[in-house]
Length: 359
Image (cartoon, rainbow, N blue to C red; front, side):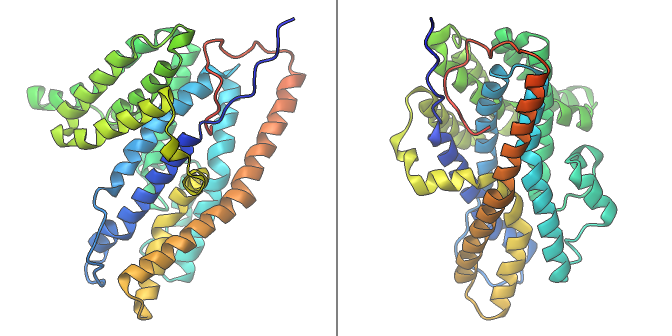
């Protein structure tokens, strides 16, 4: 009789990386972005202009995690339920809280109309060119498009050829970057968004890192080629300066995948990563309103930012523990019961390594 597989090991380093990415984005929004939006506001004397690059780290982590999730999924319905239960409860809560704070604060310039809010509830605002409830939500359309394309690749049975698929996918940024200059014709922005042509190098790095980890199971020999081509594509299509971000992101996520990184197992940082989704959704507009209110009451800019960070983290933790996690568990328990009633299902892919990133 075959022994049962050991429990999945959670890659806590991925949580820590999420925490770092969320912190970088938050500091960017509270310093550089805040001053851009409100140039008359008091100056801090310091800023984090590179913090927005935390988004690229998020994309690389997402590439890693979504490939794991699909590779271990029995059906597309399993994958869809995992994504819906992960994304929407906290997202709907963030829309409600952000809209309520903008209304109570009298920030009608940041308050969306009922129609815009309704569209935002679908998470499709980026595809429909509808203003987001919070500008930070621009990444959500990209994530949805990535999920959809990856689900299609999985459904077509192309995961076994994912290296070749990624090489072909990485040609798209070259087309969108250089075809307009050569032909005078600009490819469709919507098609580019649906195919995530501008962001695919970052997702590809994460996918390749995952497959490097699973080389002992017979996969991943193509991964170094994909990583190299992704870096070349970033340099050619986003500029050589983008390599200052791409190379460190690649090194850290490959190191985490292959060996782990003890420096990223610091419990407070890991914990911050576990609430990073709610923090990302809630921090920007609410944070800007709070910083402005504190400064108007005489708080120094740096003190206002520090207080706002504490409030944003506390609010994100409350939403994560009270809404995000219970809803995720409830939806997945319900789906587990429903899928069991539907009959037995084949086991997950045998090539999937035994690990459990937050998915």
